[in-house]
Length: 313
Ligand SMILES: O=C(O)CCC(=O)C(=O)O
Ligand SMILES: [Fe+2]
Image 1 (cartoon, helix red, strand yellow):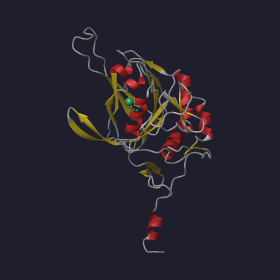
Image 2 (tube, rainbow, N blue to C red):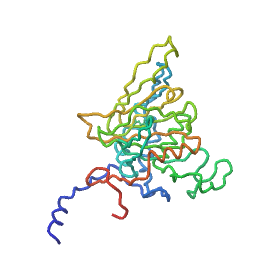
Image 3 (cartoon, rainbow, N blue to C red):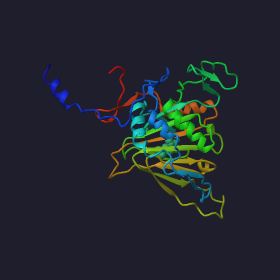
Image 4 (tube, rainbow, N blue to C red):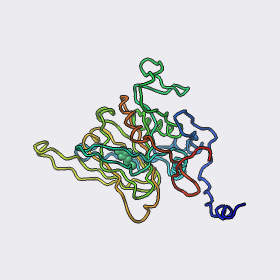
């Protein structure tokens, strides 16, 4: 053995034992960089008890319509489910250029992202191929520039439970991983036309607690003159919580997860949103901004961080 090799062997961190029993079954698809295990059977069983608490309506402000579940996912599985998803999903750190008022700007998305699903015009057949929703025939080869990915079983089980609770249908699952307090999402609304009017979005939190800020969009002078400008909101999203945003919320409110410094900011947080895209532009948009064209990252259990995924290592 070469000198150095033995040292690095002993210095290599020992992977932590996972907090769950692995499921031997996996979701596989040509579009996945690697197979994604099904949710452990014990988690699946516990998901049957969701929502763990009744949702609280928050609709006492102008144009705001939220249901806040504190928590939605049973607390018995939140830590395990967080660790499972962090370890088993492919993640990306997407970069892109935008043109803001003639100025070309390079954006480094300040969090890890991944996305699964396809808009209403197509769906996945059992063999994993895409078929046209109206005709049931295979879609034309050039329908998408991106390669849509089916929602893996481990997220699809949560989607089904969420559809049951909310009475809404979802065909997309977006996942954010905030590695620490430096990762964030700036104020925005999910009001793209491809979601249709008054979209319902179910947004889950797992892992570290992070503040979710909401503020009303500016009201044009002369518009709604006799209404008081609504106060902002701060929801301290904890592991297992779910916020359902619906009605006029996206059209009128912005939301963000700001950067944070100090205690607890070294811990990771996963956000999962379920949405429904109506047209193919939604599929192109979601893959462009949440998968992109860059390298795949996967959780490294030894160093306990996202690492560039190299097959067969
Ligand atoms: O992380 C969160 O709670 C919010 C994520 C979000 O707003 C989004 O992905 O559009
Ligand atoms: Fe959002």
